[in-house]
Length: 469
Picture 1 (cartoon, rainbow, N blue to C red):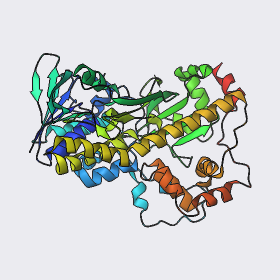
Picture 2: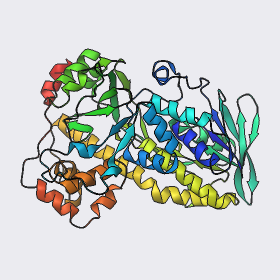
Picture 3: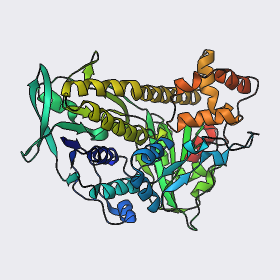
């Protein structure tokens, strides 16, 4: 068995550590933020300092794919989430009114989520990891660089060097430092060279407020899906743990008039003007309006032309790729990525170069397509917002693109399409694989080509600007 160092003590770093430890490895987790998880879940919300996690108090939803991974790999974590008051969300229970066939089907359970605020989720993972015999979490340790040597003509990472000068040897280093990982700089300083990186601003700005139920009840969901586009902005409603929820209004980051949403009265005015969402204000606010902008869609790969740049080092979760958080794909992909890393280490640990090659292949085949699909979704929505702001007509598109754009509407009218769209939303099946099904695109167009496509009720652009003036 190996000595493994995981850099980053967030959710995916802790999950990686537990999965590897339960396979027999000794795992050290190095976390820069010094404050340990508090004793109580509520104290995590009010007082846990996690400066290294920019989205720590932003909207957070655990997609069905997360529950699937927890059921299979970490059922004790799932049970601890439920014990901490996590919400159980079943979208089949809110089939749209226009769907005539409302009968349950085999497999519907795959759409059920167990979800909680980010603070609660990380508190649970940290609490379970603290009792893991082969996991040692060291908080307040800042890594300053990597130690390397050559191995068969390939740079090989042998461990890390901390800011205090301590050198920690390791058979494998796992970068789970998320969006803020400094790994590319360390690899350049270590003479390995440049990491392949693609990055672009996701183009969105988010305005979020958290609420707690006054009577213990969560507002009823009156829309088919949690995220609803309404003209040049979207509303995301996210149930949380312990009778809490978050409401996020997000739009294009360059839409200057909408920056007024950072003010609580303007935020409430816009939400009140949306009939299907206004009731989400019926709670006790437990935060101010929390803006977040400058979020990158970013992808990194430790290989060029399919050949690894380095061995002894792997990227996992957001350190590999991070995307627009409104789609809630980060932890869904990250936890599954961690489980697949455990499998790959199990098969290839004895050969570092082979492990590096195998991990690149697994990531590219199973996870990179999700990154590409997410970036395409971001770009399409931003283009739509830009057209609505400028009053320009949409460009002509081919039938496949039209079917992809109209699936959310068709899904509100057909039980099969509703479930197909939930597969994409829940991070269960890639959009390309859904649309490869025989007759699916034709059915989407059949349901949407001959009618005016309804728009969710809410303010026009002119009315929106008046509310924010």
